[in-house]
Image (cartoon, rainbow, N blue to C red; front, side, top):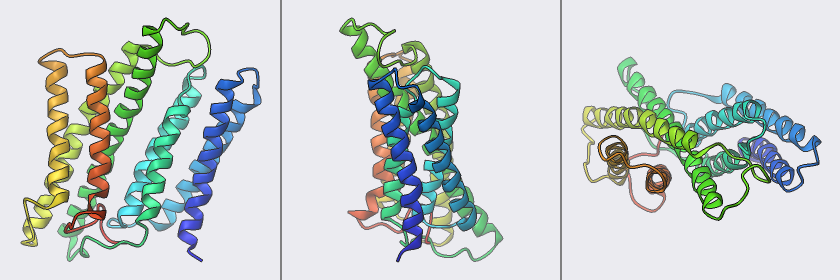
Length: 272
């Protein structure tokens, strides 16, 4: 039996139950205990997730584990948001992203990629490369979640639905601010992570500019730059900006998974 995948399935199941509890809570607002069930299952999943990562982390721990770190940070933000915004359907939008990342991670458990570090400098580059990409991915995930909420809220306003009833979300202004901050956070971190990876390749004389991983990572940087240009130079706001952030999230998933359908020099986050 693959105990690694079994443990992953356990905390993924906790997140799934939490999401179902949150969904039913908004369909049946009078069922007050569902909020506590959602919080309890999210916290239990996060605790199991934390213990799993703490017991198995190494700097180049493999693509699956790097994605689990990204999922862990997003899950933590989801739990914090659920406790801070008690009247907002926060985890209804956050937990599907967490589950998608966990599912993506479990599919790559045991894959190999980056060669072993040959010295302290090499090890530092690998660690920095992975950490920066993970942290940049957090910004992309936050902007994606806020964008989906923004589009749902804009649709409700356009169809003159009462915002005080049923599903409750943050205001369009706050959601737009979250999108902007997520992109502004992701841009420098992701760019630095890609540069670190290219330095590592250059040192090993393996740098190939047309490697699918390099191209997809660079395309995501271009999308970040275009989004920031739209917002700060062209003063674009609203739906176009939200759709751009959703495109960035799609490209993030492509960048993390492109080696499954195109030959690439490594797996994101290194070998396991």
